[in-house]
Image (cartoon, rainbow, N blue to C red; front, side, top):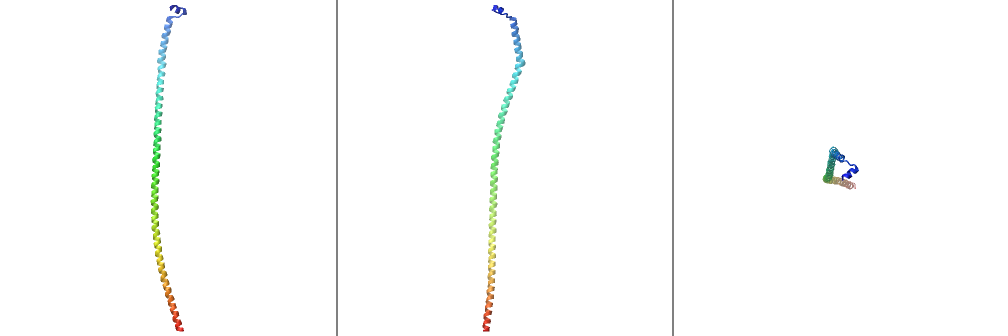
Length: 150
C-alpha cells in the first residue's frame, strides 16, 4: 500500500494536517454559523407557531362574535316584536276606550234628542190645543152671531 501512496505522491503528514484543518473548519463553522442559524430557525419556527395559535384564537373569537351578534340580533327582534305587541295592545285598548266613549256620547245624544222631541211634541200639542180652542171660540162666536142676526 505504501507503494501506491508513494506512486501517487500522497504525503501522509499533509493529509493529517488537511484533516485537522477540515475538523477545525467544521467545528468553527458549526459554532459560529450553524448554531446561530439553528437558533434563528428555531425562533422563526416559534414565531410561526405563535402566529398560527393567534390565528386560531382570532378565528375562535370571530366565531364567538358572530354567534353573539346573532344572539343580539335575535334578542333585538324579539324585543321589537314585544314592543310592537304592546303598542298594538295599547292601541286596541285605546280604540276600545274611544269606542265605548263614543257609544256613551251617542246614547246621550239619542236621549237628548228624544227629550227634545218629547218637549217639542208637547209644545206642538199645547199649541194645537190653543189653536183648536181659538178655532172653537171663533166658531162659537160665528154661530152666536148668525143666530143673533138671523
